[in-house]
Image 1: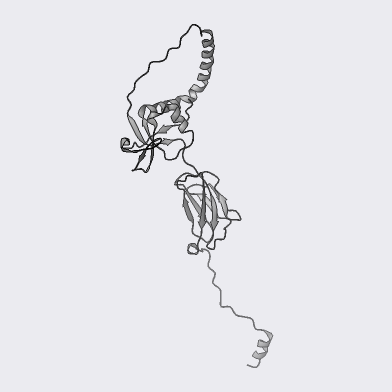
Image 2: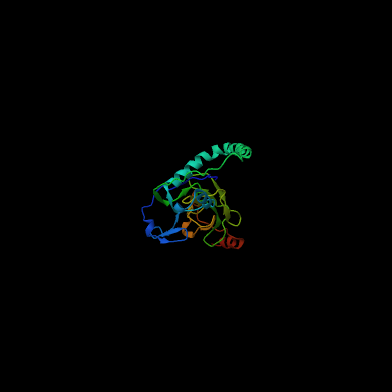
Length: 237
């Protein structure tokens, strides 16, 4: 079975699975407030099929032997692809010529006692999101030309004439976007976990955020120019 993913449990859980309320795929942990998938009853193929769809924050229960088998299959998968194809072709030729002379023998069944590991599952499928949205001023009027930059990088974009933007690369949980516009304090937005791959946000700049900085010009007292009537009256003073 093809296995191109790494599955591991970095921090094993100390909760007692036997005390969990039964669910369709395992048990419900009141401490974590989520379902714990019981993979101990699944084959390696069934586990691989379960993770064909990217999963976020999955908690599971494994036999250590299952995790070791998945890890071993992952490391050898790429090397064995070409060899497996050649071996299958040779095996097919040999099986045709010796079909009447050989008898298939089932391998002996091994009984293995494995320890159980339970905890949050880490896989190569990390959660990433498309971030898009609108930037508005204090009167809810769209702001064009707002700089949107991923904190700590030079990756970014600007809002269009309608104040809309879509960040050019996918972001992960806890990534921070910086929104900057002349005359306003810089706004921050931290990416949080979402069930949707696309997150829409609205950023509002308000009056209290406004800061103006630049060279100060001080002018004299403004005097109006005298008209002809005022000049004529002035002659008699």
